[in-house]
Image (tube, rainbow, N blue to C red; front, side, top):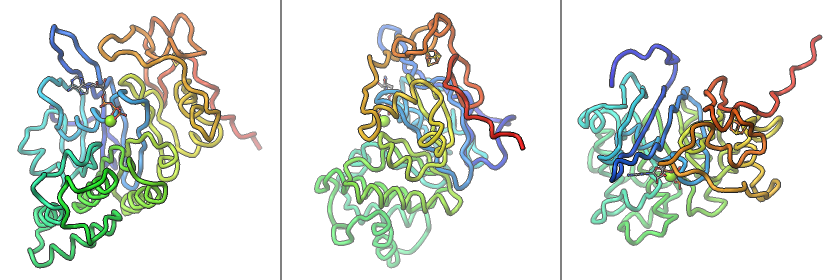
Length: 328
Ligand SMILES: Nc1ncnc2c1ncn2[C@@H]1O[C@H](COP(=O)(O)OP(=O)(O)OP(=O)(O)O)[C@@H](O)[C@H]1O
Ligand code: SF4
Ligand SMILES: [Mg+2]
């Protein structure tokens, strides 16, 4: 898909409109992994994308980079740097998008590293390809890049199979940062790290963003999201159900969507109350709101009518909006 994007905010680093991803399965079954996702990312902004396992977060990121498997079908639009990403040809994605326009910290970093190359060789090669620096300078630049992601310089000669999960994570972060892409997609960038390194990595990603780049951080770690995100997008069963300012989301008045409220309440440092029931199968979604069987605010309308996404919410009966400040 290509062409003009009528409602894109002019200053957006990324503008996603009506993005759908479906997987065709054997026997004609379809899995609706992303449904009608729309959001913008401004320069200098960090948007945290959160939601239970299997809700479609990684599929959304893969769709933006053209990394979906052959049984995927996409629709909608996603524009970054004037390039329509959805349906773009492989040559455009490889030459102009991946690493240059959009950096990726993948969810399974070890699987994305070439087994026969050391971490240092990965970094040097990426630096030379993206920045054009000479071989002699590449080693010094690789050491500096490793340092930014807290990857120990004395381990640069290790091969991927010699890395722990946490070290592979830091290597992937170093690699994603070297291209200085205007947009970074970080899929669970703090997995396998201890709390200190979580903070250090999150802060480095924030610094990267503060220089005018944008960050989409997919995470289960709501504490890391609270630390660095400007806005939070909550996904449930393939749909973004709420996008909110991070201060209002984590503080007062809190989220407005019943699922988002339960997600926060489930945290050990909050109510520690698990959300009852399980998310639906994405191959067998109900007609109305997918959260209805688990929702204590559900009515008959919820079960039959899918709530539209409007003003940052997809819900027929959200929690009350923040109180208006008293008039002078
Ligand atoms: N190639 C595929 N074929 C069919 N279904 C797929 C395929 N890849 C992913 N899915 C399905 O798409 C849905 C969304 O998966 P996704 O990996 O995006 O979840 P996620 O939100 O990233 O979960 P997690 O938090 O565990 O990483 C899941 O139900 C998954 O089973
Ligand atoms: S639409 Fe209804 S069922 Fe869905 S989250 Fe809102 S109140 Fe609950
Ligand atoms: Mg994922």
